[in-house]
Image 1: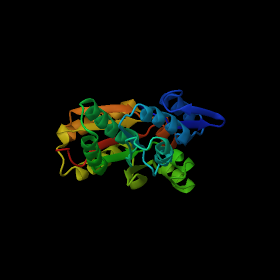
Image 2 (image 1 turned 90 degrees about the vertical axis):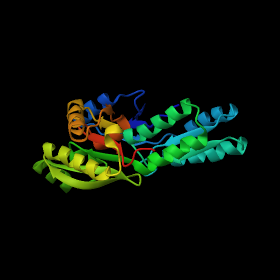
Image 3 (image 1 turned 30 degrees about the vertical axis):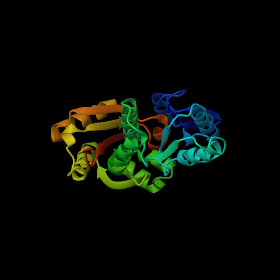
Image 4 (image 1 turned 135 degrees about the vertical axis):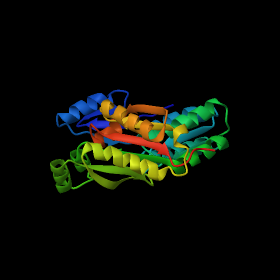
Length: 265
């Protein structure tokens, strides 16, 4: 099951990728609209967890990074409430410290293992490995959106736009952290691949599934895919849209790559 985060515009609230699409958010952002986001309410978790508890199911809930959203804390609160009524309910909540497709790759692997009939302990062992090794590297097209979200100063956003400076960021201990500034689009892709190479010294990269996410920027996502294939021999990719929740903060044009520092066994 998937629970959606909330995207807000004024009085209007939308469920991420359910009642509003990423494309709609990006089109409206380009026209100057500003969106905010909010966590899944504890009540939503309580209802879902109660359903599982009544059915005596064993549940692993993988939460979006606690440093980027209050969703993990809301889930923990709901668990405490539900276990007062169902003390034997077997629920494990994991703070993935991941976001976007980095989070998605962890969820997909856990779901695959569950479908194969693996035990809770076996699934959590693999999830822990992913948490230690998943890498997020991304760049934004326009610093204005990071400024609106308080990630960069107004001066940095203005100067960056003037000089065509592209920041490269990653997720570190669940937080969004700038790691490099590069001038020009061509150079930023090369720099992202340099980071990828430096972080995969112990990996069998050609035999990994590499994720690429884009904010209404499919053409450049394909360009990045081709560069990764040419440089590293990677064959398997997952390319998807950056959803409205992340997109509301990073803005249209953003590109991100996701990979593992090490392959799992």
